[in-house]
Length: 335
Ligand SMILES: [Zn+2]
Image 1 (tube, protein in one colour):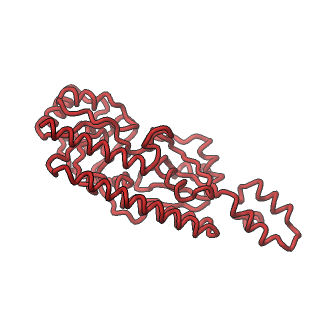
Image 2 (tube, rainbow, N blue to C red):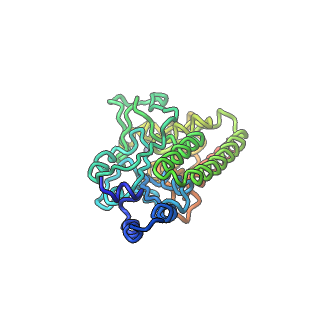
Image 3 (cartoon, protein in one colour):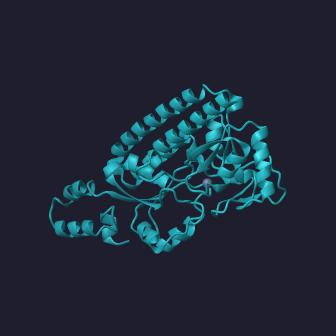
């Protein structure tokens, strides 16, 4: 290990090396560089937009976040570029979801030679598994691919844990602890920002529960594109029937679609939703043919761009819950 690496908590910062060089030989080196260090933002890479937002909320101006999979983009089928490898090489902290969400990450960290602090955001959540809770009419080998590189096998871990605000709180605490491990001088800063963030999550969680309380349990059934809302459904008592859980084909046959339409009619589905990173065509067709309400967009695996309400994790959660409550209420009035 080089001296620079030992002296500087930011071994990749050219500026820091220069400052250390300039200050070398003076008796005030320790105190002076400590003060300067706290002003240099900690370079952090987050694997996808939801984690990127969480890191910004907790790290504030003391972190410089690079997000690999951006807004409205699908992390399941992501293909990293040399630019991503460079960002990771320059980072001191990597925040990842885990739960097999970022299948492309091991190759990338290896290519980048990343040796910094890894923060597993989902550590400690109660893991859900893709189960046969939904009825499946198909009898192949339980493998879904919805056409955007998103294959779910039953019995596999469901990675979408952020779709439950209690898990969001666990993520926030893990991220604060990880930033603190990499940058202990700012520990109290990270901890107090995380505490405020968790308090906002708690407030939103009870808001969502209050809003949903107006809807009887038997009216809480909706169609979504891919199987991303298992945690949401379990936490807030909504049954999500994923289109991809009924038909396994990227482009289902007319018969598959007819089967879904029939199921929607029979089971009093409140609305059909699309997701921000998948194609709306099939959902629109099912809504049209079944007469169910087209519920609009839910954000599952990525935030919206900066000018949309769902451009933050809390904004996304509030948007999704608001859409669901609005559509389920409207569908009850139609019955
Ligand atoms: Zn997903």
